[in-house]
Image 1 (cartoon, rainbow, N blue to C red):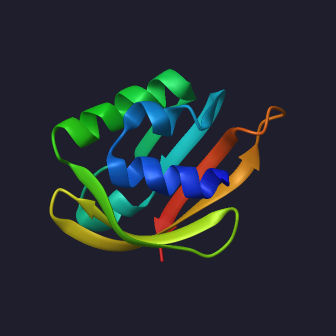
Image 2 (tube, one colour):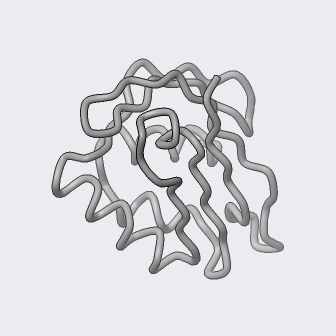
Image 3 (cartoon, one colour):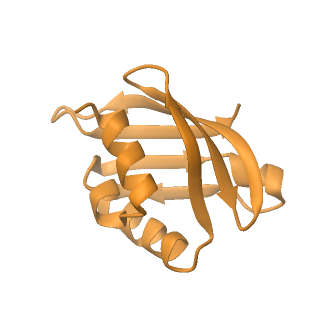
Length: 110
């Protein structure tokens, strides 16, 4: 299963551990979509930071995705829901680590 498919599966299951394990220990995750919902941008760094970040978001029901459409091995479109705001987003794996993990992922409004 590709990393992008695993990412979607972990996001839909709201499983922060499975999600964070897709990323390298020095990974960068940036989400620009919350800005359109009047919230600060999301930045998380490294496996542990990504795990803690999404654990908080999922636990307090502040984030989820709907209707994902995988368009390539590195991109997926979905509706991102930020505390009730629905935004069409595209998540892109921009770089991989030497071990084949996600090194950099960016989410932008689509």
